[in-house]
Structures are given as structure tokens and as C-alpha cells.
Length: 437
Image 1 (cartoon, rainbow, N blue to C red):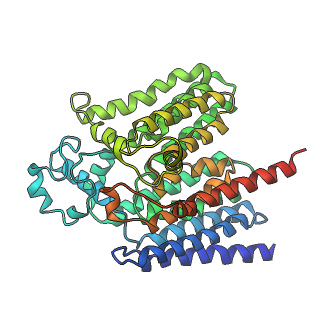
Image 2: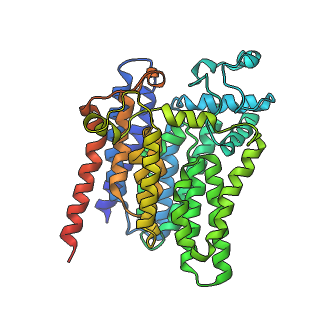
């Protein structure tokens, strides 16, 4: 037991030190910094695998809980000083625009009517896509408005997003259940991409992941009870949680068909999952104001770091104009097919549905992988954890020109992201075949 505890302690301390050290390499105006940043992050990922796999399960449950939470909180504190991602300036701007009485869906940052407002926003030049109005769903915009009223300090946003992330960890522990719940949850708690994306880079996706994970937990509880009243209560709790998540980001809508299969007679409750985001949309003038226009434009033309379509385009299906509409249609179709295939096994199906969407997405920012990590942790799908670390290689090729020019990467560059999870998947299949009767 002592040797396991020592190995775990060394691994988690190493990850903590390496994530804190990222602060020395977060000035990406210097050409050499991304290489050092990625190298440090990947080594932190190796320490993460060691820490999660060596979690001291022979401790008492109380000691395991304290170990898990101490590690999770310390890792997130370690990355708070890092430079945030440039999306943060967009969050702050759109909150400020609303505070000034403008509709973020009706005015783009470079709109002449906002000239006086721009003069009071020192980071205006750092906002990306300044010719587009808001692309985020209305629930996210309400949150930006609320945070903007409290402070412009990036630390506030990081703390809010990290708090949602830690709340997700609590739900993951409940979802896993059983005697080994803390050891299994370590694969989420110590994940360096999750830690960096929310507490370090200040991406707001943790606010969506939290209610989405809550919806999955409620759905699991629905299937565990035979009481009709409890089933309806869990069904409406599932629907409300999905509705909140969809209001913040549309991704959880991909899981609604599987949720309907799981709820069966109570599937009608999912009307709430649609009614909630529609109601929030009305706050911003929908349908009179087309609040989804910029998001639709973004989905059609933005292309970055895809895992799959580059290979198809290089072999059988050329796409010289780099348009995404047909890819999005294919993605939605595949998710629907997967949902029907796993209609009797929604737990496995949700991992496959969300995983298919990520693999087929024309855009794969690293923090998008965090969407699936709660499910992957619950279902012990380790290749997704491997991908989450491999995706740090994305930052090697990050450049401001990515947002204005078509993005291109050589096959060897893509292999840095794609090969590690494929190898992990093959090894997992081999182990499963070896243990099968």
C-alpha cells in the first residue's frame, strides 16, 4: 500500500508542478513558446495517467474523498495565473454590450454604434471575429451579462468556470457510484485538459457540461426506480437539466433522442428541454431577431483541426471551398443512426453519439474534448482520455491567422493528435479480447 501511495504522490505532485509551470510558456507572441507549452502539458498528461491509475484505493472512503478533492482543487488553483484564451475577451465584450443596452445578436463588435463603448474596453483588439455578432446561445449570453456586472477581472470568470467544473466532478462521483467511485472519478478530476480549459484558459463550456452531466445522472436514477411518481420527477429533472445545458451550448441536443428512448413513457417531459432554450431566446427578440444567424454562418464556414474529413477530402471527396454544410448533415445523420442502434442501451449510446459528433466535427478545439470526459470517465473509455492529452498538440500550430485563413496541417502533424488514441483503442480491444471467455 505504501508503494502505491508513494507512486501516486509523486505522480500528482509532478502533474501539479508541470501545470503550474505552464505559466512560464503562455506568452504565445514568442515563437518558441507553443513548443515548450505543449511539451510541458504532454508530460503533465503522462503524470496524469500515472496518478489516475495509481489512485490509492486501499485508503478509507473518507481518505479517498479527501485525496481526490485536494488534488482536483490544487490542480485548478495551479493554472489560475495562466493567460486566458482569447474567447474570454468576447465573453467580456458581449456582457459589456448588454450592460450598455445593446442586443449582442444585433450588433457586431466593429459596429459603428459601439465606437464609444470600444474606447472603454482595452482588450477590444483581442476579440476574435469582430465582424460577427454573437454566436453563443442565449443562456450563455445571460451568464456573460451577469458576470460583466460583477467584474472585468479574468479571475472571476476562471473561478466561475472552475466551480462549475468541480460541481461536475461531484456529479461524476455520484454517477459512478460503488466502492471505487473516487478512483474512477480521478480520471476526470486530474485530467490536465479539463483543468487547463476552464481554470486556466477560461472557456465557458464547463457551464454546459455541468447540467448535461446532471441530466445523465437524473436519467440513470429514472431507470433505477419503479415508482411511477419518481419516474416522472426524474424525467422532468432530466428535461430541465438538458434544457439548461442546451440554452448554454447546443451540443447536448444531440443526446435528446437517446434520452427519449431511455425515458419511454415519460419521454413527453423532454418538451421542456426545447421549451426552455426557446423561452430564453425570446429574451433577445427571437424569432423577430435572428439570433442564430452568426452561429449558422460559423458552423458553415469555420474549419479547424478536424479528425476525419481531411482524410476523405484527400482521397475520395474533394472540398476546395472548405464548406461544412454537408459535413454537418452527415454528422447529425450519424448521431441519429447511433441513437437508434443503442436505443436499448442509452448509457453506451450517449458515449457513442457524442463521440461520433466530435470525430465528425469540422472543428475540434481541444476544450471540445472536455464535453465527453465525464461520460468517458463513467464508462471507462480510456482512449478519450488519451485524446484529451494528445489534443494539446493543437497549440503547436495555433496562430491568429487560423481565424482568417483556411487551416492546413500536414499528415504528420495530424498524427500527433490522432495516433495516440487509436493506439489506446487497439490496446483496449486487445485486452478485452484476451479477457473474454
